[in-house]
Length: 110
Length: 111
View (cartoon, chains in turn orange, purple):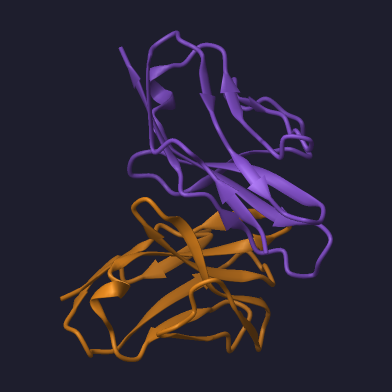
């Protein structure tokens, strides 16, 4: 019972490259979220999904796309990475503010 | 739109001293407030929520709607309390319940 699994844990990209961060859950939650964590700025919501097939923008969605094709998985895609997207990315799931977080994916864009 | 402010980036205290981590919020509707904690090399996890009115690991927090605050308190800090603490808000009166986090306060408890 892994709860929330994020892959990869670490990634280094060059500016302009693309990549997808994967998040999978075995907790049967409808709501899933992607946050980014930056020093001095806390966690900021990128996108969230209230249920399979639906997604909504959060506070900082520019430069990202998401996909929720089934209940278990919620992926975050960077189409053309920029140095400003260097961050730690967290997937989370749950509802009414009680969230379970993944271990995080540390992304560096050179 | 909602906003959560944690004015201190770093709070350093000695073991046994009282701790108060400040959190102020702005939201025109009805909020639910939370404290999350991230210990070194561990996942972010829920510490407490104002609705539960619990004390977790000796920490308490009271929602003060007049001052729009939700400060986290502990009477006697322990070294194992050293961590990053985030205050967060979820609107109770809309369908959009995603959490808004503050910028976080790092608590260092020195021996």
